[in-house]
Image: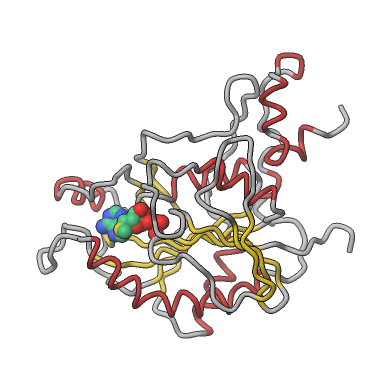
Length: 296
Ligand SMILES: CSC[C@H]1O[C@H](OP(=O)(O)O)[C@H](O)[C@@H]1O
Ligand SMILES: Nc1ncnc2[nH]cnc12
């Protein structure tokens, strides 16, 4: 049993999800990180005995824009809180006529069109290149799919999430371009979040909850926040039911990630030890401690 662990489940709540019901032993705690402040305090607790840590991605009351989120601080705070698996819950627009509002998409690919965010922990002074060819943990995806089926959700397994910078919604030409690229849903937050989770060796998956048809659909009005929030509130009960079902399943004692998410840094560091910047190494204590603290 020595190579098995008891997972700790991180929940990143998106638009409309600023708390988690039914957590036992709940406590909001401030977590300091070397990358600055996370979006808010983190909510620690247990669901059916499974340890979980919730972070409202935009902060309670939604004060933060997608571009102003400190993605590095959010992921670092979850990592140093012991989180092994992150389930991201996000509102998205649909770029696919078969995915109407109310559908939950278990995303498996991303296109990153963001340009105004810090995207890596590994700056000059400790360079690393991790693979994000398969950016989502299939074990979490399998578990979420099973839970979604068990509770009768309308869901789709697999789909490509395009991350735009925002905060404005897309132009019609952009929306049509992303459809032509084969993207299924669009949002503003899951990149660089998923990339940073991979750098931090945390398994990560997203449930993208469709709130609107963006602006491409001839039979629907262009998206507004009002419409997004209305549908999100209608989705929220199903999101909460999904969380209550999936967390106990994800929290079962288990071995290493079959896809290797928890070993992503194994061969990723390229800066020679004598060229590494000690100040940066100190900041990487939580994210890369597993590989940096190993005896040479
Ligand atoms: C309020 S609509 C736009 C907003 O909603 C999504 O956020 P999240 O992924 O955190 O649910 C989208 O990415 C935008 O940030
Ligand atoms: N249409 C849309 N575009 C970007 N982000 C969204 N979040 C919810 N709907 C969205």
